[in-house]
Image (tube, rainbow, N blue to C red):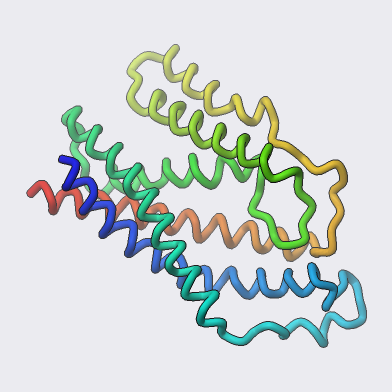
Length: 224
């Protein structure tokens, strides 16, 4: 069983990690590079030099992009290990892992790891106002863990009281509230920040759906 989980996760996680990294290089990295110009002062919000600096730092950086692809592959392989372990456990409960359920596992992963934390801590651009790093990390891990627990309770409970408990558990981090900066100021334009957050979450959703699908696909292959 353990060997099957590892093999499935390696295949699914590596493929999704590479695909996700390539999509981010195309759709997200240009926004990051643009924001870095504001962070360093090469551009200023409402400044007269915006048109002159908007295309700086656009050369392809092989080292940076190569490391980004490698890091993405490792991250999604780690996600795949968790997702496939949950799929394996669900299979042991005689739950048929077809394409629809595989994708639902991926959707739930996206909700737990990216969408739910983004309600309190949206994806941030360089130069954006933010609270201290350590409290944000603590809140993020807390949010992810209780969201996974809540989704699991809601998904596999057959009694309404347990479903309500699961929903309440999901809401707890947001009732507590994420750490916020003292002042919402920074050099990065809010229009750029919103564009970055929307693209990051959209690509995250697509990546998790693909991860769920491939995890189920390779899992069935290993068990056929």
